[in-house]
Amino acid sequence: MKLKLMILFLAIGSIAFAQKKEMRKIEKAISKENFVEAQNIFRSIDENSVEEKYAATYNFYKAANYMDLTGKNPANLDVLRKAEAAVAKAKEAGYSDPVLEPMLEKMMLDRKFAIVSENLKSGNLETAATLLEEMYEKYPENLGLLYDLSNIRYSLKDYDKALEYYTILLDKKYDGVLTTYKAVKTNGEEQVFVSEKLRDLSVQSGSHSNPTESKSSSLLGDIVLKTVWIYVNQDNKSKGLEVYKQSVASNPDDISLKLAKADIYLTLGMMDEYKEAIENMGDDIKDPNVFINLGIDALKNEKYDSAITYFKSGLKLDPDNYVALVNIANSYINKGNSKGNTAEDQKKLYLLAIDNFRKAHVIKPEVKDITKTLVNLYEFLDMKEQAAEMKAKL
Image (cartoon, rainbow, N blue to C red; front, side, top):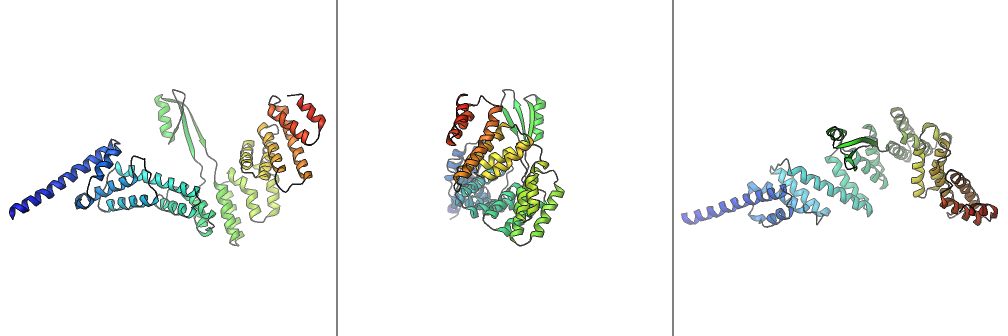
């Protein structure tokens, strides 16, 4: 009997030793990024035979196995949930690793972001919102997550939640402006840095030169406009106006807020202020490129009236801006080709397009595409002399 017990204890001890050895092998393989080897070792372990003292480590590697470190089989949402459960179980049992934990956590977060994107593309907004809410709960300092979440809730018409989130963004003075730090390598290639400090250190070391930085556009105007709209939708115009006034007082130089002014007044039903804002749009903003970029975006999205308004504001600041002239002309043509226009409407819009194309032609007469377009427009409108004049320039 004693001999049998001794054999049993030896057998258990050898299993425990083997498990410990396998765990170390997995850790070593992962640290060397030999992920296939790590997964093969893990899959050779019988889960039912894992001793309690190795359960925490086993569950952590189980989560890593679910995530497929090789990247060949990206986890779907169900598998990601299993990985999250395994990590939680590992931590509950006391697992901790300063290197591997952050590595797996980042992988899981990146995959969750990818699943959010997949759901947004396929129209599953509720699933995307739920996942973003989970991420924001874990990373409350990441206000970019909250902004995306706010917009999804707004799209879902979940206005109470959207308002709650937009209010947090406003209270925390979030404007969404991101600074990108760049410098040029010795081989001439431009590199983006995660921080100003790293960029500056690289320049000081001599490995990079020509440091630059750029800022993304503010999102404050969008946040305020949607917040105002929700309050108006809730029959609380006074609160909407209060939010707008407070935002302007706190951010008097924010361009996005200035650009949203007209739309905000329109939303509030303040028509006199709306008309004044439209007429004086160029007074607050002195850079024509702000309006031109907005116009190009509106044109791409087939919002021709908005595009024309933006290009007009840009041309008010820079009357000889070639890009604005060509694009406002294209906006008139596209509007003229839209359904619902009479022949007379189309003619008026085509004549406006011609007027702007001619100005562009004077600035850059060598651009033959503009000349050809003018010929086509003149011929369509049966303006033979003008068509002949342009043909002679081809």
